[in-house]
Length: 266
Image 1 (tube, rainbow, N blue to C red):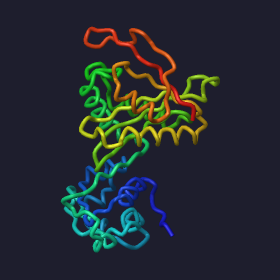
Image 2 (image 1 turned 180 degrees about the horizontal axis):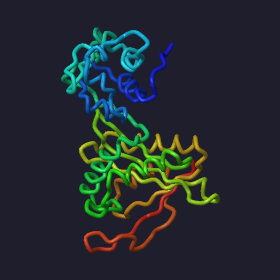
Image 3 (image 1 turned 135 degrees about the vertical axis):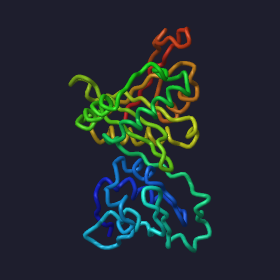
Image 4 (image 1 turned 90 degrees about the horizontal axis):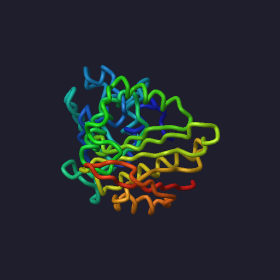
């Protein structure tokens, strides 16, 4: 029977559940990125926190439930996990050849600073976004305030994609602003170039669609620059249809560009 542990460790448990590696070396920063919160002080002060295997502590179930144990700890730097389950499996990978592990989770307030850096990176890598790198001046305080509003909203959310302990992308879902529009939501997605073509955008969209259904949203909407053929192909593959065109929607590099409105009934 699955063990019960603090909800903040659920993303970490998902990480280990996906892994087929015999050994996994994860830095403290990567673990905190995966869970979206700071580790307790005890995790930085004592290796025994990591090597506990008995109640009343419960955090260790995040990895022991998937057959992993702690092999080595360098406090404040990394933890090396070893799997007994995968030890004799010839198909599993070793520590030098870990597979990509993708976690999709809701944003936490402590993600604010990292989310700003994530957006700045994505905005600087493409001309197909609404904003350029220097267009948005965000502070940690303002982003936390916005995240707090998302967490208290019944029809808006922010999902983060974390691959191998690194922020890779995000999907924002903004619900309709009035009672007559509560059934629909606008979505906005971004993925860092170094993580492109790894299925992250598709995974974000599917998680976003599932969450939207759970809260009663029945239509998703987005806009995409007409020249962004790659994104259009992805959206059409996921069931979105072009509903209209907004001419001269944006000015990018001194040129007018048009946008397609796309929507999907879910």
